[in-house]
Image 1 (cartoon, rainbow, N blue to C red):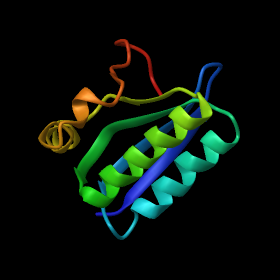
Image 2 (cartoon, rainbow, N blue to C red):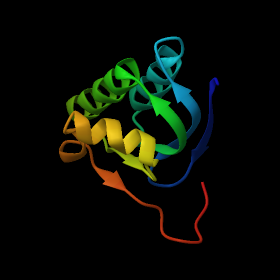
Image 3 (cartoon, helix red, strand yellow):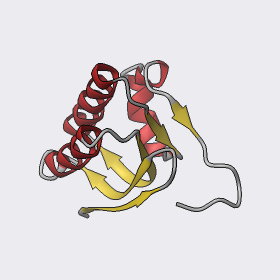
Image 4 (cartoon, one colour):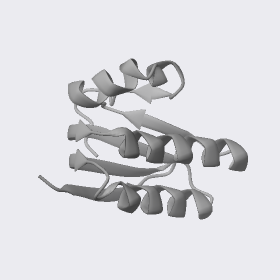
Length: 109
């Protein structure tokens, strides 16, 4: 299964909704997209609701984006994290590092 993402900008942030599997073969695409939005001076939310699998390279891309956002004093958060993705984040204890949010019910990305 491959990774796809949809990008929506609202007043507060650019939301990057990811679906599929984030792995070594495609994590650089996510990294490039997130870092690009941060370079534009936008806060970024990465919606992981549709993520079935994430490996260490995907986690590294998210960590790099988190670090870049802190350097630029921009918001960066994960939202609607799937069970599979949360399992990996918890294993690495990154659930204690990232700002993880859920979308209010009824709202859509």
